[in-house]
Image (cartoon, rainbow, N blue to C red; front, side):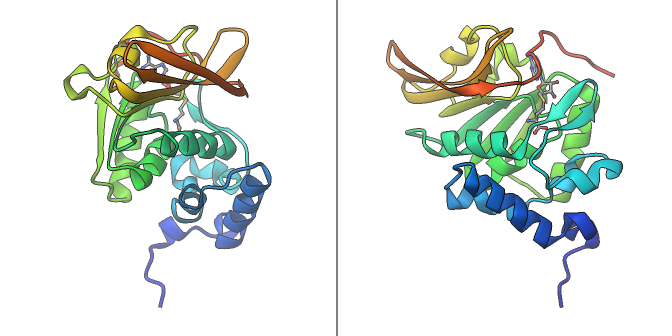
Length: 224
Ligand code: SAH
């Protein structure tokens, strides 16, 4: 007997078949890491959006999560997760922009420790509740301005950002390990590129992956 609660398993459009179709689509788009693909099978994306949008949770689209923010499209979450796993080290990861918590959950099943900061308090609280439902024990959340990173927990092997600054934030580069630390985030104002910056001592190796469209990274925190 399947004892998984209905809430996690999902019904109708959130069924296993719809999830399988999404995974096929991700493979067609070039996602090949088996562990990343498996996350879309096991993590209930419908939990991360309002119930009214649940039927769209397994389509390859971004979805609104309130406060003018969006849960990224599955392809982007998968692509960024592959870039995390391809980093020379990826045990300790800092995420900027918890948002719904979906990317956070994906990371939690791929790496040892996930630290995630969010500047909008109500979004962070909802994400915290969802992560508790999934019983994730290797995630730490903080309400903070991600431009500052998380100095007390630095250095990180990887820092991943899900909102776009116009230039790479210097504090984030400082908080990477010196031997192959990776910053993975959208960068740019009118035109954004998903960018990987790898730190090797004083040298930064910068690679633009592909054009993307993320919400802008904003300063300060927005408490309730
Ligand atoms: N990864 C999220 C995507 C959320 S959209 C998800 O899977 O749902 C980007 C998020 O970045 C928003 O929640 C936004 O509030 C947050 N954000 C923007 N600027 C930030 C900053 N300076 N510090 C922390 N979070 C920030």
